[in-house]
Amino acid sequence: AQSVTQLGSHVSVSEGALVLLRCNYSSSVPPYLFWYVQYPNQGLQLLLKYTTGATLVKGINGFEAEFKKSETSFHLTKPSAHMSDAAEYFCAVSRGGGTSYGKLTFGQGTILTVHP
Amino acid sequence: DADVTQTPRNRITKTGKRIMLECSQTKGHDRMYWYRQDPGLGLRLIYYSFDVKDINKGEISDGYSVSRQAQAKFSLSLESAIPNQTALYFCATSDGQDMRGYTFGSGTRLTVV
Image (cartoon, rainbow over all chains, first blue to last red; front, side, top):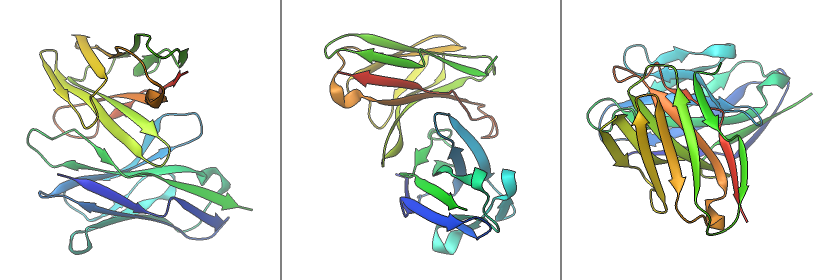
């Protein structure tokens, strides 16, 4: 079975500050890992994903995440927050193959607030 | 037009009523999914279908049923709605080869009173 834990249901930063959203996962097989963003009253948009290869993954809107197998983590960062980054962020994991392939298990979400 | 279209966008229904949420896609993907989102719980998988003849229960299928009418259509039914089924429901599709094509619809906000 897979699971995802996002540390901190709410994170607040000042505009221009570093954004760090934490995600830890458990998976019995090599995982595929994802970050999604949800703006108010909208669906989910893929920010970035890790499947194989380079462990530092760059996504849209200046976000990046690093897959650390030894720490079972996939934390999301952005060097400088912008007001438009205010949203809810979801980390998700999928098995890298087999019958569970394509099924996503989500974390509980982290609401990011950006202060002027 | 959106790649994944959900109807209705919003719905209020009474306890005990049967309701169907519909999803259609133009991505040409074989795989389709229904998730529900609850505050503080993230998204949880209700049902998924890897092709027209393949339907599988997800994490929280009790009280729900689905129908895959065609490759492009995947409907979710609540046979007898109850208040704790009040949630935001998302349909999603994916390409069977890799995860690049995982696309979500805009969601259906369902309220059961």
